[in-house]
Amino acid sequence: MTQAQSRRLRTSCLLLLLLLVAGMPLLSVAATSLPATATASFAIEGLTTGTSVPAGVALRVTVTAKTMTGTVDPDYAGTIQFSSTAPRALLPARYTFNPSVDRGSREFLVTFQSYGLWELLVQDLNTPTIKSHVPSITVTPGPPVRFTVALDSATVAGTGYTLQVLPVDASGNRTDYTGRVHFETTVLRAVLPPDTDVSFTAEQATPLEFPITFLSASPELKTLTVTDVTGQNLTGSASTVVSAGPFARVKLFTTSPDPTPTCSEATLVLKAEDAWENPVTEVPAATVTLCTAPGSSATFVRSTLERAVYSPPCVRGTLASISQVVWKNTKPEDVEFTVSGVAARAPLTLHFQAGTPSAQTSSFSFSESTTEPAALLLRSGQLTAQLTLRDQCGDPATLPAGKLLSFAANPPLSVTPPVEEAPGRWKTSVSLPECPSDASKTLAVWPLIDNEVLKKPSGEQVKRLVLAQCSTLAKLSVLTSADSLVAEPGELVEFEVEVSTEGDLTLTSGVLMLEPQGLTVTGASSSGQALPARGGGFELPELRKGSPLTVKVTAQTTTQLQQTVGTKVWVVDPEGALLTQMERVDFQQKDLGVDVGCGCHTGGLPGQLATWLALLGVASRQRGGLRRLRRGERIDP
Image (cartoon, rainbow, N blue to C red; front, top):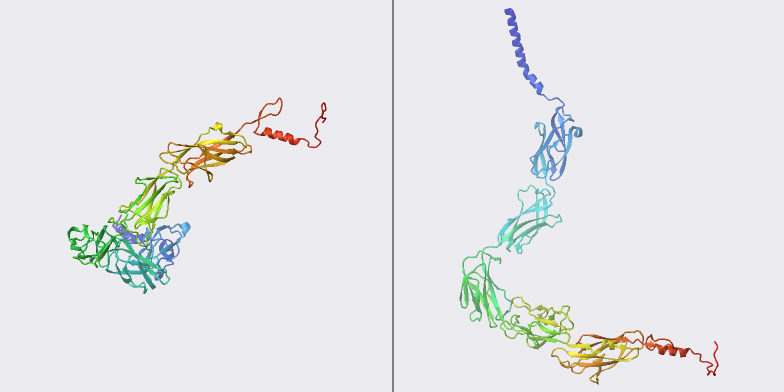
């Protein structure tokens, strides 16, 4: 190669190198450029810049994939995500387009809940440059649906507070409201605002404010409620715990009844309070003095005042939140008590009164028995329950005016209306008309005043116990053996019974009772002496222990066949109370034989049947043409 050729070759190579270097950017641009049909951005339909939308309303938003030329890209298969500057916005979840279904366009729901000016952005998850942005969306509040009420969770009685009330829509945004509000609280005593006309707009920076003061303290959570009274159906509430204010004074009161019975213990209570009568627990360490009036007969019993010192007629000590001092007085009088050393309310006067009945000292007994329980015989028994009223000092007491005394008892016990034997002494009769279902169970009798049972200080009811005695007082037995109790119809019969006493009881006026069936009782006798008839029975002579009575009863049986013949026998007192058990005396009919002619045997036919058959034969003869037969004459049929 010549030198000239060599230079031309070098020049050509240099030019080629320059062309390659100059052409590289063009190749790079050509290699990275997207085709004109690829997705370049998104279009959002249904929501544009400057749009005003209501809070809480779901909006239909359509997202469409667009190419560089602005046409729809039906082949878009990317994943999109939504974001917004609006707090509490309800946005769709990430979504991957399906070209065969979506064809580049898809509808979504977007809900803004916060009042204000916000933005919305839609981006491709993998290519953030593919996006659409709505920079200015105005969210307006909805109509008011409730009040939000703000109040300190802990308040102090007597201290003024500011109550904040804000009308809000369904999404919690402050909103426009014009109406009248009413205030209520579960706090027992409070100073509340009157019903107030108000007007509020969503642009206001601060809520509606109202002054409020609670006066009653309570450890429990209390509620304050604000309600619209113009028919818009708005309400809202807040809760707080109200504590007592600072110590202000001592309240002196008694837990004893008024008037206070003499000889009873009267308890005076010193309670530390704030200015609104709420009890306080934090009390200044101050000495308090409780005194009776000069010349009073009230005596000190005990006290819960810390390090209490008694210097008649006063008690001194350090006050706790609640302290008690107990006094007693045997004299009926009015006694004034005063408190000094700290601020206190007006003095307290106790009215001691004698003669007030006390269940602790009153007595309730059965005059016939000191045992417990007292035995009470069935029907014939009787107890006298006696109540003697005494006051706390043990002196006789009378029933307070307007009060009614009565007695009650467990069934089947029966009590009579009370009778006042002497002032403060009452009695009633107790009887047992029938045996209880469970005779082993004790029954009770008790007094009542105005239908309230008397109770001792321990809570025990004043009552007396009774044990029913349901066994009979006498014994009855049938002496005639069952084999001898046999009779034919219309026959006169007799049987004997024996009556004897049980225990040491003397029976002076018993009545032997009979309840016959198929019998007509004609009389009764004892030791050959006829017994007088009485009612459905016969009077018995006096019956003593070891001397039983034998009574013979005579009767005539019925003439009717196949009828039960017998009687029930028992003994009662003149009032009809059962004294013995009941016994039965039953007769069996005789087994009579009937002679029906020569060659016949005696059959077991009912009594008097033979007589009836003979009478029947006579009655069946022909009455007309009767004559005596001659010798040798016969009668042909």
